[in-house]
Length: 401
Image (cartoon, rainbow, N blue to C red):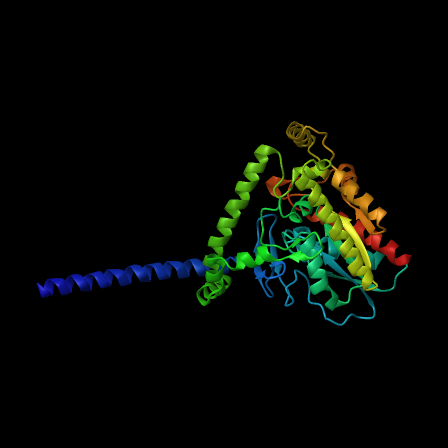
């Protein structure tokens, strides 16, 4: 009996060791294969108690959601080159504030609009002998409130001469609304122009966040940043969710992450308050920048439908919009509303969408999208190129005054 039992235990342990060894070898082979293929997709973001999330200093890896780009985050937590805290006497520093369009993970760093603006300015602005030095503080998902806090908390350490606020009209209005924004882990502006951080803090008090921030969670996060096989799992989940979102919006004609209500004057109290809050934030930005004796430039970007070459898709969107909202589709309504507000309050501005739309038609090129999703999503290299050139010309004019 004992011999039979001992033999069973020995065989069981032997089989268990063989299974574990097989799993380990298989995982090791997968890990080595992924490294040979240069696959890398670490976590690019970390929590922040004031703005919700920031980029992780030193993170580097492949982005393949839109386009395919190897991303590096500098030691200061910026999707940018390294910058000294001391400004060169021969440079004009520009702090770039914005969301995923400024972060620009979809294109190589030298193809981003702020890099193109630098190159164009340095080569074509005859009235200025100094070099442009953009410093990119853009982070995906940010609204104007987060950008204001980053300006006040982080941008001034670089002593910029100009602050460029990139406004994504397609979702920044919603981002600034407590009622409309589904992602509550961010600051919101109160009626008295103070900030409400309670949503971020309540998020950080959840059991899920505490587990992630415990020593076990931190070890797991660290492991995911070094083990390619774990990164592949996270990446596959993100890719599935992104493609599922694309599939859903393709059926509704809307764009991923873009709010259709911006294409007409606000109708609901929530929409009106979202616009009001955004405009108050723009005035706070003006006061903060001018209080430092610097210049502010507000640049409104574009959405895919605004600069679309696909007239069939455009008409489908227009008809769907007008059926839903019972009001005419006004593709440049948010741009011209912001323009009127900025003019009234004497704030430098640049409205890109109409100019990019004309260029897209003249040159028969898409400004947005990659691969099978041309016309939607973020700027591709064309969008960044022409936006950067237009911005450089605007800066040249501002600095010549």
